[in-house]
Length: 173
Image (cartoon, rainbow, N blue to C red; front, side, top):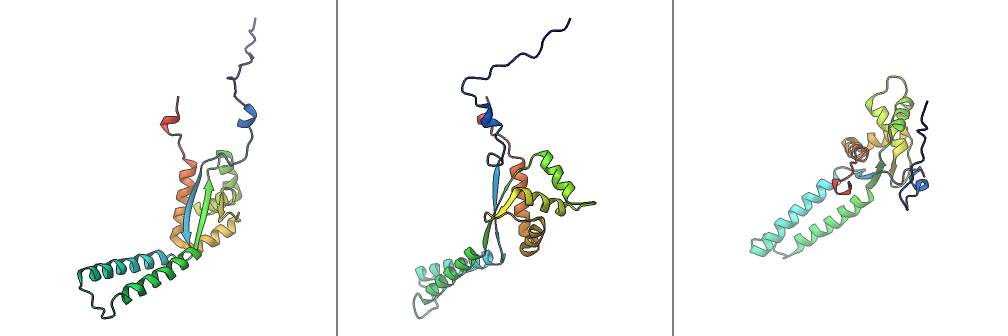
């Protein structure tokens, strides 16, 4: 004789199953990476800021070689403002979220026969990434990689972090 094991389990009061089964990706862990079209600009800004600190120190100690007073510091400040404007114009924000295993498998399949790791990465980003809020094709991700070079590692790192996003221990019961 068999027992009926299909008992209905009562959900806790206030639990909304429909909210949990909604789908979509808004609830997944999202990570961001900032990349620059011209990767040399951040170093140029740092260089000018170092010169500014040195000029400021020289001015404070009276060791300034500039007979015109603060003109060197003012010129450096102007150069810094110009570089920061260029940096802001060259900046892009990549946002990615972690795919579930089934979606990862679809990306691998879409990468074709004998795909490289990068082919798969471009397919994953086509599904899980945006550049300044815009979706890109796998080919466009490839072109972006060619444009930004090693900065692309920031994008793939952000994806790994989104994929591996563990629940913090303080949220466990």
